[in-house]
Image 1: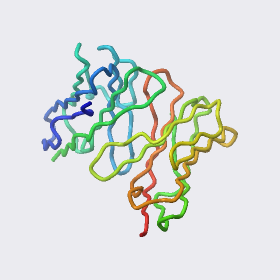
Image 2: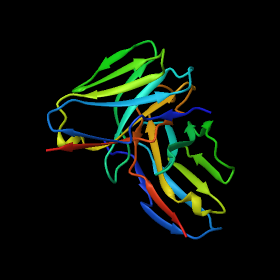
Image 3: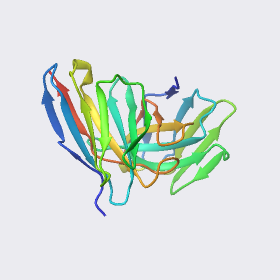
Image 4: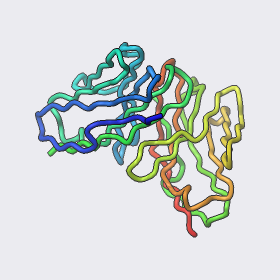
Amino acid sequence: KAGVTQTPRYLIKTRGQQVTLSCSPISGHRSVSWYQQTPGQGLQFLFEYFSETQRNKGNFPGRFSGRQFSNSRSEMNVSTLELGDSALYLCASSQKTGRGEQFFGPGTRLTVL
Amino acid sequence: GESVGLHLPTLSVQEGDNSIINCAYSNSASDYFIWYKQESGKGPQFIIDIRSNMDKRQGQRVTVLLNKTVKHLSLQIAATQPGDSAVYFCAETGYTGNQFYFGTGTSLTVIP
């Protein structure tokens, strides 16, 4: 069974631009969660989508948004990029929402110049 | 908000020794905990989980201990191997859904 895939793997943008990242979950998984990982803050929860509905949202500004499609693929968008948005963005999929194992993708490394 | 902290940012052990990685959490409502392993260039990988109605759970070469009284979690790795070298995170949630809070990680180095 294929794992979680994320595209692109690397991205360089400049301040003020916007970016869209994509995540394809494991087949059959309906929950996709997004995390931001930085050396200083570690992994921080952005949001979770389950069956095309946002289930939970972390403490990030409205510039960070996401969505999930009927095939469970998910995208996250960051508008008006800031230097501090440089990070590894990870998505994780699971069969259901709630307690249970999440499978992480390799991440998208975003650099904002 | 919640905070999940780690006692030691780095840990070095000799191959074959046992490793203990510690984690403190602050949310008394947390009821589910996971340990993850993250190797360089990869996403975190699930190791073992534990619910708050348990105080110990064992897996293959790993044991997680939960002390709810002092809000402390530990991961024990038996007979540590070079392949265990990675960053280890604890994560917790008291929410419905998959809203987890992660610690900043402990880097484990296994010395051959």
